[in-house]
Image 1 (cartoon, chains in turn purple, cyan):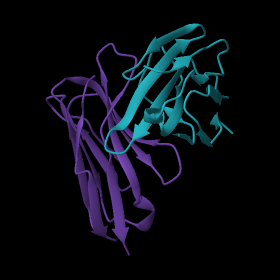
Image 2: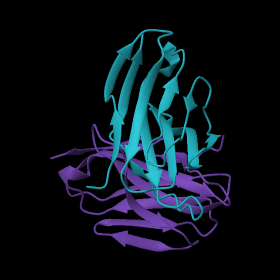
Image 3: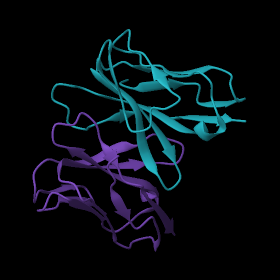
Length: 111
Length: 115
C-alpha cells in the first residue's frame, strides 16, 4: 500500500522547547491530517488541512499542507508535559475513502 | 457522550480459537473502519465500511472478517487467530462516507495477544 515517511521517529526534548516533525510521500494527497495518541488511548485529531499551502494553527500547534501536496509538517511551540505522546500524520488520496498513516513520532519531554 | 466503544480492551488467546472484537459508535456515523497498530509501522487499515452492508478491504485484510448489519456496530472477527495477529487494534468512525474528510473518531483500543 501507500507509504508515508514520518520523521523523526522519536524525540527527547526539554520542557519549553519547540518541536518540529514532518511527513513526506511520493504520492499527491488531497487532505493531510495530524493526530495525537496519548498513552493507553486512541488517536485524537489535532489539525486537518484541505488545501495546498494551507497553514493552520490550533493553540501552540501549527501545521502546513505542502505546496507540492506531497508533504506536511507539524510544529509545537513551548512544549509542556501533556504534549507527551505519539503524533501521526495521515493523508487522503484523491477519491479514496481511507487514510494512509505515517509511522508516528514518539515525543518524550524531560521536565 | 459521543464515543466509539470497543470490547474487550485486553485479550490473551491461543492460536486457532475464534474471537470477535466488538465496536459500537453512538454518533450515527456512516463510515467505520478497523486499524492495527504495530511498533514502527504506524496504523494500518484492515477493513472499512461506507454504510450498512457495505464493506471493503483495507491494506492488511488477511486473516480478518467484518460485518456491518447495523449502522452503529462494526465487529472484527478473527476466525483462526495466529501469533502474527498479536497487535493493538483500533476501531474508528467518521460522519459521512459520501463526503469523507478523513476526520476519524477512534475507540480506546483493544490489545490482543495470540499465543
